[in-house]
Amino acid sequence: MRLEARGLRKVFSSGDGVHDISLSVAEGEIHALVGLNGAGKSTLMRLILGMLTPDAGTIRIEDTDIHRAPLGLWAGVGHLSEAPFAYPELTVSQNLRMVARLHGLSKSASQRAAAGIIEELNLDKYADRRVSALSLGNKQRVGLAAALQHDARLIVLDEPSNALDPSGVILLRTALERRAARGAGILVSSHHLDEVARVANSISVVDAGRVIGSLDPSGVDIERAFFGLVHESQVNA
Image (cartoon, rainbow, N blue to C red):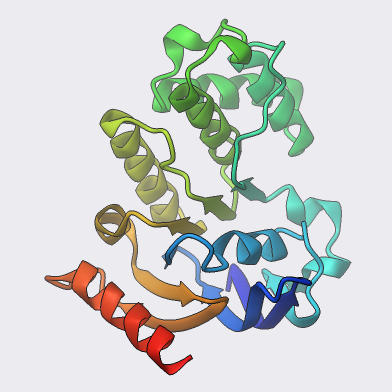
């Protein structure tokens, strides 16, 4: 199992957070989290990535508790959490090579990885531009490139299609399918139901910090099923 979370709980002073969430992502699986804004998706992602400490529960990546994980384990994880991070004064290529080195790639391997993902995500004409000069959509592509370039075994992406144009969404979809076919486990959050249905093997619905059900990616009216689950959850809350 690439990722296994059990009984995760994190409650803030406002009462928001996540409550007793369990989920798993297998090798080669694309697992999508969907929910309305404020449902708890981003908090869950930050817990899984070790950015927040849970009040209760466990998170294991490749059968290793993340709070006792060696650095080598994290080198095999690619992530994009909320806004993409990059050094604005550096070029796209410089940013990607630096991130690749931080994931343990050699200098020559990082150059090859950066060149490969720049081509894959159609960033060629921006490779030598400073990130500060890019549009929001192309900054998002740079963040995705950093998460995907080193062939991670686990990929965690929070709202990855934010600011992407239709061509960028298609490139992202293809890139995720390609990595899942090579054995990566992928966890992706989104509020774009139609898009995740195109790529996901499994879909979990999150509302008020809890997983309230699942959706069939091949279902004929996935939007109706989603809102039905959310309505039932809120009525019974």
